[in-house]
Image 1: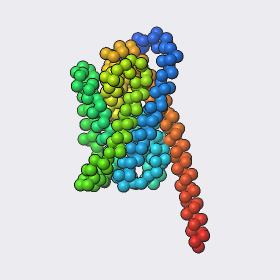
Image 2: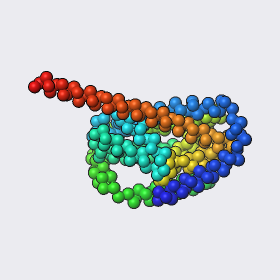
Image 3: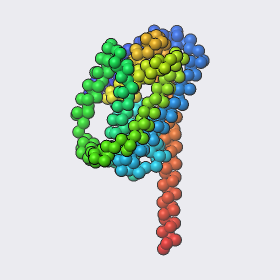
Image 4: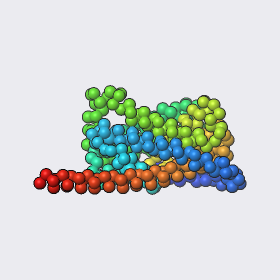
Length: 308
């Protein structure tokens, strides 16, 4: 299934690349204003990452692991850059490895990551309904194929810790009193905020996207379809190729196929820059956490010495 997802990503990337090659003259003639747009779009993407990191920290707390925001954000940002490694799973493995390194309980990490994916997919799916409801072309066929691949991978998962321990934590946290909406309102709201901020990054890439509220909603909905398809496709690094095809195809009725292709390229540039900046911030936060841990150990040792 991962090979199928990787092949699908390569096919989409080849198709999008052929389309971009046909626009070589227009790509060369891009004005400085258009080239500057991805830099402006970086800001909402970084803010979206902060909202996602905060949501994960709250979910960790709800699942029984108390972690400082600086450490949670450091782990989240550092591991997130691994999504560019082929396979589309390295960021999850990296987050578990870093959490273990910093003595965060593993079972709550698995449980919180499962909730994070659940909330994120639910929010994206709801916001993508306007696009799904009004299109029946290749966009929907591609999304359906991707969802089938994702479902097959999910059914074939056989990780004992994920199937048993983490699921038991989820049942315990979600069962009974845990179903109260206020318990999960904050992470759900933060997931929604992260999605809207990411959509705002796309809106900054072309003035036509903010012409009317209905167009804004349509563009954000198309973005959610593209993000969701790239997220659930196993084997596609950061949804490469898949998101670009869906974006350019979906934006064609609004700004035309040529402009949609350029916007898809600019969005990939903006997202990559934001991920690089976030990766640097994450490394800095992890270094800060190491310093704080050493200071705490020294303080504990000094207290014991005084007590003796």
